[in-house]
Length: 258
Ligand SMILES: [Zn+2]
Image (cartoon, rainbow, N blue to C red; front, side, top):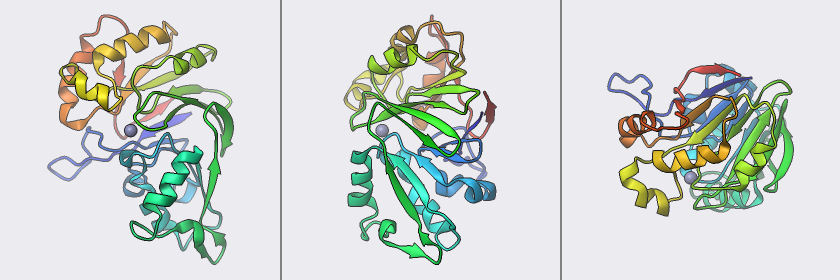
């Protein structure tokens, strides 16, 4: 399984910076998990091959690139882009994004080949397929309804928390998964911003350490994503000082093989 966190933030020279404002993981060049930077950072190959987009939740940093991705491909699509999401997330997209005011309601539009998007709702705690992947959605603890995923291509299997604060169900469920190839966790804020992390339902390094104890020693690499770019250096330093599992930082743009 190949996984890439698409770039979303620019350095002073205009090239992609290591910071992460938006979330979009592309798996095997075919499936997007969240669509934060999908429209902006997708390569021509991504535009040709990605027809399945799987969403954790409806926050802007996870969906911002979806309208642009559909817009780019509108005239060329020979099959609809399938948007896999919880019913409540689909409701938000239709009501607040694809509402003609913010952007066109693509669900009511067709090109010469037919519909351009198709909603594929999944309930929390469900298993479904997206392209060649088997995906299990597990509810997490965020400010809005949100899920994490266990994703398998038949060989490798990875777990992604998405945005979350403290939780138990996700860890209990992933404990039943054997041979995890990697865990991707969030850690948005530094320790001194614990209060903001609390109200916005995110993690700090100290609180992530407690979560990783629940995950246990699974002999699988742990990567940290979704670090707020303004606090990136501080969070990375605090993660390096943890006494238990020290997650690696998931590098923007790098292709990981699991
Ligand atoms: Zn969020």
